Image (cartoon, rainbow, N blue to C red; front, side):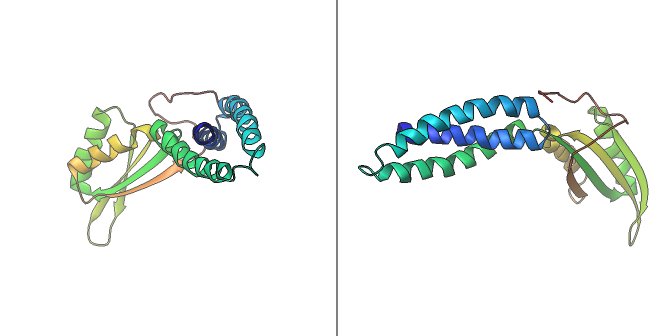
Length: 170
């Protein structure tokens, strides 16, 4: 049981570390790597020593790895690091009330007039912390359930207006 829990913890930390580093949080990722490798040394040595007498240790170790990857990805999705670009295309008349709603809730929004196949549209462009993504989508759908919403992850963002970003060991 100790092997399972320790391996799940180690791999969860490793998964989170990898995600942090790829999103630019190098200092925090490096700090987690120390904890990850320390756990790995103790868990792996416990499995390797005595695996011939108890092969189930290898299976438990493998199960811990698989569950750890899942848990690590769930942790990352809950803390939602990074930024997103949300593009919304709506009918022009609906777009203005959506624009107002988003701005009243503190989001920086750029609007662009667009021509759809059958009517004039308004495209709204919003940059936000990934943690706020669901709240923004809820605000959009309160105004228009049929709005076309495209969400992209943002690696680099410089200039412009956006509410303060949280910084975490970058």
